[in-house]
Length: 325
Ligand SMILES: Nc1nc2c(ncn2[C@@H]2O[C@H](COP(=O)(O)OP(=O)(O)OP(=O)(O)O)[C@@H](O)[C@H]2O)c(=O)[nH]1
Ligand SMILES: [Mg+2]
Image (cartoon, rainbow, N blue to C red; front, side, top):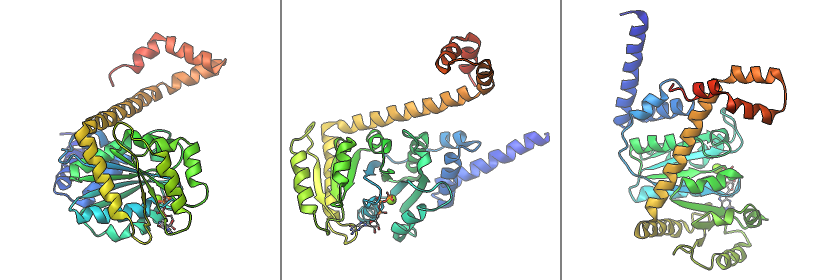
């Protein structure tokens, strides 16, 4: 065997060992696999293909403006679900920091009480991983969590723009966190966010103004849609109040999805979004192979839109792009 052959064999062994450890619920292997997959390192696809999904977790999306208390509420939800014997995986997107730290620390501090619990795994990502839409990484982490046997997955969005709407395509239950603090609900209304949630929690309800907001929201969500009336619940993550009611409401929504058969629709919607994002990533990979060709076109000069049109008319390029590799 030549050196290259030997190298490949060793690499295969390392990979097999990693997956074997993962299957034994080794948290180090879980962290390693998430990181390889997140960074799209060599063999990430091989790893994903080798993961056996052993659970069918319920997926909860938590959204709301920065600082509304999403992480603090999730921290409370984790405790509540752990009390019911659920295994909880959390995917949190961080608005501020690139890969190096910064606000990630915030999440860590807010959810630290669970770091020693084997039934909980919390992973923060930079907002870049979410991007303009939903990154394929989100679906890959869900797949990895299914392989590790989590029964509940909670996703914290960055709480701005696209992410708040995109969570609808990923989660079974969407929880919007508002606060009585100035303008929060108004902003959400303007951004069209109020259409998104199945449940609304008014967090920080120990401060004044929560009763008014509660009434306004109940007025707004007066009528059921497809048989579900959006539930509004007053909570305080700080004082640990209203959490039981919130968890009961999540469970009621889950029951409603099951009874009405809409849970299948929720699954299909997630699959469709996953398919699209995987397709997009694959397509971008293929397009990137044409960078040189694109530079050549640019050197020739002209209007960008015309260039794009001509690009798609070039049969040689098209053939190359869709070549199977
Ligand atoms: N008064 C009060 N403060 C709270 C409550 N819940 C959270 N906070 C505080 O609000 C701040 C933001 O809380 P986070 O949980 O980090 O909010 P977040 O929505 O996750 O914030 P980002 O992830 O940065 O968008 C922190 O200082 C919390 O301590 C609450 O119920 N009452
Ligand atoms: Mg947070």
